[in-house]
Structure formats: structure tokens, C-alpha cells
Length: 362
Image (cartoon, rainbow, N blue to C red; front, side):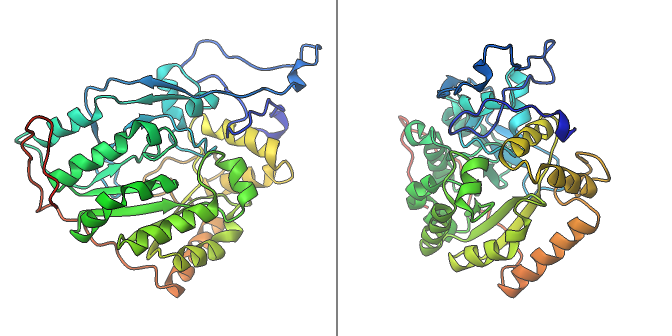
């Protein structure tokens, strides 16, 4: 990955990725270039979002990763309109022959049979309840959820089955579902994380173009906390040379807005993300592009990425150690370093579905 090799690309208003580079599974690679007619400088225009049906066979996805706190997820959507340039889920779009770039944030899939599948899988005789992480691959509260309401309907099922759930979002739309989440949290069945990467609205608009602005996310934390829902702030990702100077101010802000715990993840650059990030850096912060990439490599043993368990989220070396110490001292000072309380599984019960109606009596 060479900053000198990055080309200036079209900029699509309201989108995070600079290009729609070819995925690693494709036989042909496409590149934009100046053919002498001056069109490469033209405004790329508005890129419309396309929403497509995804008929899944299963809705609960299991994992055995030793460095994450949950073993199962439910993702109602694939792709994410928030357009966060750093999103670790971008490479999953290449499995469909699509790009991890602009395709990921404009060609979205929704699982229309998600609710029926969840009821079926929770009702199996051998099902053992553990915390379901709802929307951990892509945000369950991205803009299309406002009309689709899949996340709302999935929450209603989990509510009725008294099944533990964790949520992580950067959207204010989660406030719509406080009526479900608050009683679940009171019963020890729900916890919520809100992701926030910067307090700089300008940087946020470039880096996460269709996600809620920083102040809106802080206000969302306050609304959740005021409803009695424990809130964890995820200051993720930390990007050395770009937003790491905000660690202490970010943590003070989230603490002031009701968050009681905080965590972080270091920037990860697997597969196509490394090239997308480089393009974005050259386009938006060219004076810092080389420094950011060099710091990332310094934390990954000279590589763009190290997928080793427990190392991939934190990195290693002097810079990673310094960030870890700064973060630890800040959350200790703010009394935000308490261990997370485990959610309850003993309340789980299978609900008989009579004519599509379920009793919601947590």
C-alpha cells in the first residue's frame, strides 16, 4: 500500500468511499483514468441507494472468535448506508461480486423473512439461549430501518421470548425502541452500546457521512441512560494520527451524557479496507495520510493488518501501548471501568404463536 500510488477519484456527495474498486474475487479489475476529455473532473452526481431482498435460510449466525464477547449474532441487513469508511464489514460485499467501496453503502440487502426465521430458531427444542448481538456486522439502525422496521420486529420477538440481546449503534433511531429496550434492560435482558469516533462534526461528516452527528449520538446516550438503560460508549475505531488525540475528551463527553462503561477498537485494515482507507486519506487529509498509514503499520509489526486473536483489536508496539494506557487511565478517572454485568438467560421461554400474535409481558 503506497500513498504515492493513490489516484484522485470521484467524490460522491454523502458517501464515505472514494471509489468502487473491484473486489478480490473478481477476474477483471476496473480503474478510473483521465482519457483526455476532462470528464474525470466532473461532478459524479448523486448515487442512489438500492434496497434488495435477501431471502436467508438462517438468521442466527454463530462464531467461535475468542476475542469477542458473544457467540451469536442476528443481522437484518447486509451493507450499510452510514458509509463509514473504516467499517470492518465492507469486505463481506465482495462475496456477492460487489465492491466493498460504494456498492457496500449503496446496494443494500434486507432479510425479509428474518422475523419468521428467528421465531423458528428460538423455538427449536435443543436451542440454548445466550446473548444475541443484534446488528453487529452492519448497523441494525441504519437509515433504511426507519421504513423497513425489521430491527423493531426482531426486538419484539426477543422481548416476547425473554431472550437476552445486546445492541451497538451510531444512530439516534434506537430511541424509537426505548419502549422495548428499557423494560428488557430492567429485567437484565438488554444492554446497549453507542459508537462514537470523534467530536469533530466536520471529520465525522467525511468519515461517517450518513451516520448521526457526534452531538446527536451523545444526546442518544443521554436518552437511553435516562430511560434506565445501561450505556456503553464504543470509541471505535481509534485511528492513530487522526482521532487518537480525542480519547480523553471523547470519554469525558460520553460520561457526561450517561455512559457508564467504555471500550475501544484500533483501526483494522483487512482485505479491501486498506486500499479504501488509503484513498480516503489521500482525498480528505492528504497532509496526514502517510503518517496514519505508517502508525498503523507500526502497530501491526510492519504489516497493514495482523489478524492474530486478541491482537487484531488492539495492535502492539509503543503507540498501541500508549493508547491503551491513556484509555485505561481516562476511564478509571471517570469511574467507567466496571466489569459488565452478564445478561440473564434463565427467563427465556418459547412463546406459542397464535395467529401471529405474541404476548409481550416482560
